[in-house]
Length: 229
Image: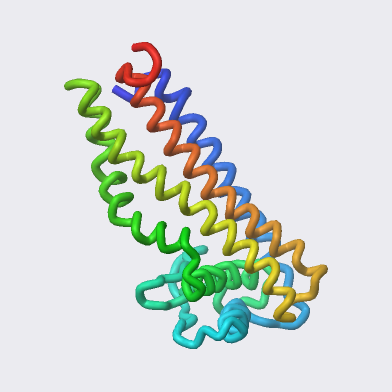
């Protein structure tokens, strides 16, 4: 049905693929470029993250390596700051920026940054909305608009989660940009590479919000719940 629905293709698939694809390509290209730029002081990603944690008085978070490409993340439950293979031991400007961004999340956690806690609380709802909401909306188009509305409410949890994620990611990026220089990990002139990598990464979260919003609007319009049938 949706494969041959020109409105779905034009409103959801094409814009989503273009926006998400462009953001992903930008991140990969900038990471590749600045992965080849070694930091002057020679800190690795793991060392840079540890410096920020120590300076913030955080001693219960472990910096550990993890598999995967750009699979870096901070887990508030286990208090582990996991850095991907290309970041953990690399001395590049790109790796330091990403590592410090993740350290920014650990600092948010330690300082009880409200949006981070809200995002964590929304994880179960977002998981349900992601796995069920889309299919309920799709089935509702064949059954009744009220079912589409139920699915839309579930799917909206995904959108809410992604919207709350924006300030969390932007704040972690802002912390990383500022603290990486204040801590003496890189020189101010080296921050341009860090800025470019982290700014590109931030765009992927914006792209996710736009894609989810387009999907939600499509189903509401197709069912007649938004605008005319």
